Length: 163
Image (cartoon, rainbow, N blue to C red; front, top):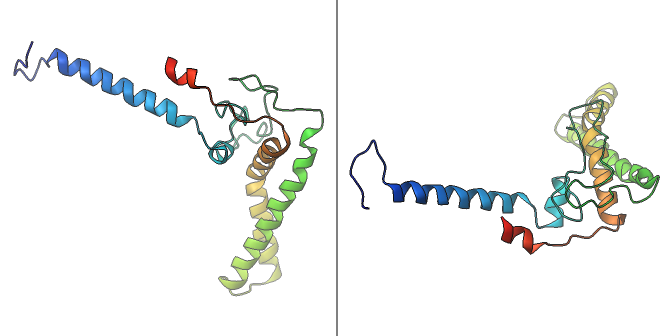
């Protein structure tokens, strides 16, 4: 069956190939949505074992629940809290993030802002620290889990074959 030339009724082969092309793009999106690199998985706050499951249950903008984490990964069931009190060590990483924030804001105000009064430094640093607190907490926990959690990435080729 060839092309009918009728613009209202498309050719069946064209419709079938368009559907196959859409499916191929969808599968490519699914494959690309799973970061293969541990760095990309960390930056997107994904499970260190499967790189698919989310580390946090709510958005960072939900101030009442931005710290909530599931007990296990929703995809591979790896425990996200290896032992009680595991994330106490993340306080030191978060402290490092806050020191970097203070130094960056201070240097920007000094060199770009022309060394303003002390109250400007205090307000700018306090505002930046409060605004970045959810991100600092989330990334400090994620780094703690990636560095010391014991879960290592395991690529599952059967998942790609079944897609």
